[in-house]
Image (cartoon, rainbow, N blue to C red; front, side, top):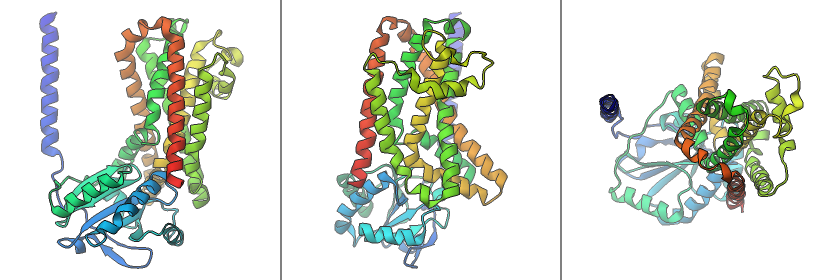
Length: 422
């Protein structure tokens, strides 16, 4: 038995080493940043290769009503006067619904002093943009030396710009993608979005707390632990998919009128999370809030008594999945402010090919986010089996921890929105 186990371990190690070597061999090597030709909102033609050997170029991928993009804009505005003679900044709007007139109004309102342009040359694909905002820095020799999502503070921007100007920054590869590869990448980015991923610790504590409740009911007898974890991740991922299908459909139909209000999801979700977290810190029952989601679940089951899950004493399994589905909706809504515009850009870009391409891109995007949630749920279940078994008496504590985490995440989302628009 020990020899067999050792053989399995050695085989796994060999496979991992081979995969790593192949990945290193196939991983794209540093090369010139993908060239492009676009016009800014004033009609000036911008060609990246024209700056080679002359200036550092900074690409700021954004859209008008993006809270994180607004934070990054303010940070860039602080440092731009120090570097305006040595760098060229181009803010590139990737949201198709943002028109040139709206961008000009936005530029005039905010006082942007650098180039502003729409993405008319598939830059989101050429530079593999999976989340917004994303900052790409290209040195004088035309090599990309930095690419990251988020809002680097002014001091970090100064350091990045100085290294690029001095030529001491190391070149990095840029992975150009097809529209379908970008759909997969963007789907993963939506899961790890800075707007939503802070909610994942809340999901973990909620899942563990619900699993502890379920383990003491007849649900444990009917469903294996790992299979239940698979279903749990599926329920949460359905919530995420539900949000993006609605957001995607509405924003395509209503266009700019809806897109401009999309960031308001963040503070709204934040307030809801704070309220739910507060409820979890009390002994008050919040099962009534989940009745709509329980009824949705009952539609997919052959139950003659759909109200039997309205309390935890009757059937914990319905409440178990309904809560996770509801949390998935919150997770998807929180991420929408960061990635929904890119989501729409990917889908509309695929629709240029055909309706089938658009549907395939939509499936790839949503299924990537869903599979990540399911996979991590199963991993969490496998890793924490012994922990959960040893924490049966700590269910109330887990519930309170979940409440505290939800409150913290809610405050984070509200503060994030406030910092962007103060």
